[in-house]
Structure formats: structure tokens, C-alpha cells
Image (cartoon, rainbow, N blue to C red; front, side, top):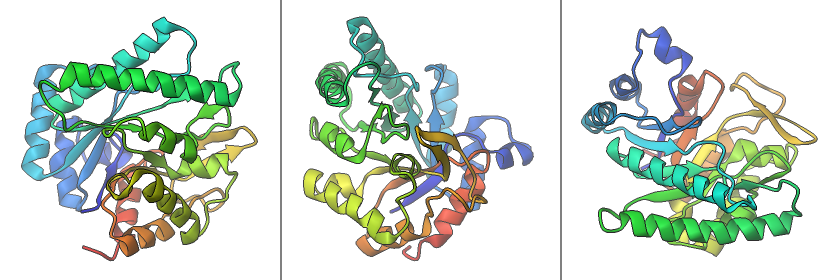
Length: 284
């Protein structure tokens, strides 16, 4: 099954009179959407009572929930103390998403800082290996169904190109790629245009990581403004200048019968645009 839904509470959610995330479950179900991503972008703050209420409602309506770890993770940081903080953000996010009934956590891998790109990638790879040892040590006695998703990034100085994400996902069986196709389009300066542009990424993933991770990849999608340095800001589907377009990706997902978890990150219109995305799919 393809799962599609918004990242966070959209403008339409609040305009409909809703206030609390647990209310998303019934609302999304009524719209025909079946996924939701909770962002811990500024820190993992989730009380047990709130998490339990979200889990109850999302289970009731069959909506799957994922989480985005705090945005400031950087596994290429030369400071051991900062690596420990990044590991802590992921561990806290896994704990929180499990309390909400989810299993997927997305994270930003790294940035180059003052390092050459390959040095930064090597450092990130080594520290993500350390992260996954800690994840296994912390959780495997309780559960093993977590999926940790390093995300493609949109700025030129960030670590997270498709090939780098594939490299990281070879580290551990529980690392699955998160392809943010808007970010990919940013660092490629608008090169994602056709079904074959998407096909090259999916085929490479299947060849390098196997069908399981390719078919069940995590996807972020929105149109994003970019400049010479890459990503500038998220847009809505009303944009006709920057792209990318979702329809060719939907056609490829249907052709390959993929079963990804797709999160719309449009600026404020993420629910409306998620519905547009859903309607491009012809498969049940």
C-alpha cells in the first residue's frame, strides 16, 4: 500500500476548527489520506499522555505516523560531544515515535562545515555506524521494528545526495532512504523533470540496496525554490517555476508497484497537496 499524508498540521486543519494533533487521525481518514509525520524539528517534547492519545486515535483510524528528528543533527561534526547530542536526538525520537505507535524516524545526516566533502562524508558514515550500534543496544531488547531514514538534503554544503544516502543505508539493515525529491531537485538545479529522472534514482536504489529498501523507501515531496547554493524555501503546488512535478513519480510508483511512505511538505498546504498527490495514483 502507498501511504500519503502531510507533515504537521496544515492551514486547512486549523481552518476546519481542529487544534490538537490527535484530531488529525479522524480528519485525515475522512479525506482519504493514511499517513502523517510529526516533526520534532526544534526538540523532542512529547508527554506520555499526549503520545498515548495520538497512538489511540491513529490506530483507531488506520493512520500511520512517522517522526522527524530535530533538524540540527550533524554526524560529520568533528566534536565528539556534538555527535553524542545527535545520537541522543535520534534515540529520543525513536522512543517518542514508538509511544505514538510509529516506527519511522527521519533525520538530517550532516553538513560539510569547513571540511572537504569526502572527509565530511567519511566522518558521517563512521558516526552513523556508531549511531546504529547505540540504537541496537538501546532498543533491541524491547523492539526491532524501527526504521531510521537518512534524508537527502537540498543545500550544496549539506551531506545527503542520493549516492551518499545509499552509502549510509548500506551500514545497517534498519536504515532506509528518505528521498526528498524537492531537495534532490534543488541540488541538481532543476534537473528532476521526467519519469526517467525519477526512474534512475529508484533503479539505482534497488541495485545498491535491494528491493525491500527501494519499494518501502520514505519520501518527502514538495516544490522548493532554489538558487546557486541550493534550497531556499518550500513552496506550494501552485508554483509553476521551480518544481519538481509529482505526477511522473506517481506514474513510476504505480508502474513498479512500489509501497513507499510519502509525506507532503508543502508550505501550509501540505494536506491539500497530499490529496493532489494521492489522486495522481491509479493503483488501489
